[in-house]
Amino acid sequence: GENVEQHPSTLSVQEGDSAVIKCTYSDSASNYFPWYKQELGKRPQLIIDIRSNVGEKKDQRIAVTLNKTAKHFSLHITETQPEDSAVYFCAAGGADGLTFGKGTHLIIQP
Amino acid sequence: ETGVTQSPTHLIKTRGQQVTLRCSSQSGHNTVSWYQQALGQGPQFIFQYYREEENGRGNFPPRFSGLQFPNYSSELNVNALELDDSALYLCASSLVASGGTGELFFGEGSRLTVL
Image 1 (cartoon, each protein chain N blue to C red):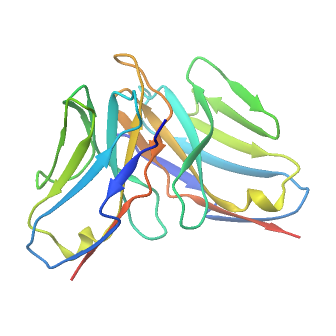
Image 2: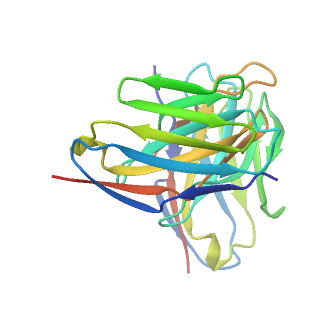
């Protein structure tokens, strides 16, 4: 089955700086790579996703890159704001389900 | 449009008992998946149903079973509960074409404690 590794487990950045979270996956058949944000005590919510036929996708301050050869993908958040503080999960998979990483706790320092 | 709802929100069981958790998918969604989330961990994929058929399963034993009904509501059954089954159980629904993928819409979860 699929195995997803996510790093770092905790990331602390100054407000306004950029944050980068990295994930690797094992199954070359995976073709869908979403990122979810989970605030304390709330449900996970999709923030951006990318499919295997695309190398990069951007949505305002958030971007995701995918390297299929190396089997890794990354989340980039620019100009971080206090409301970006949360746990972020990457996931990989396809039509038969998603495997999630263990999460990155992003802390935005004022 | 109503979102994904789950019941019960909290429950306590003892080791060896059985539990049924319920989920009502978002209106119009045809796929439901269940995840187990231990404290401080990522959601672990249990299984997925597409149009009432299981079409994907994670690394969980057979005592974890499920159903999806014609109205796309779903339930997760866990038999012979173990202490390690204590976790938040998340249901997520999506609308996908056959063989496709799409955004998961999660419910608030059911917090299960096994004593």
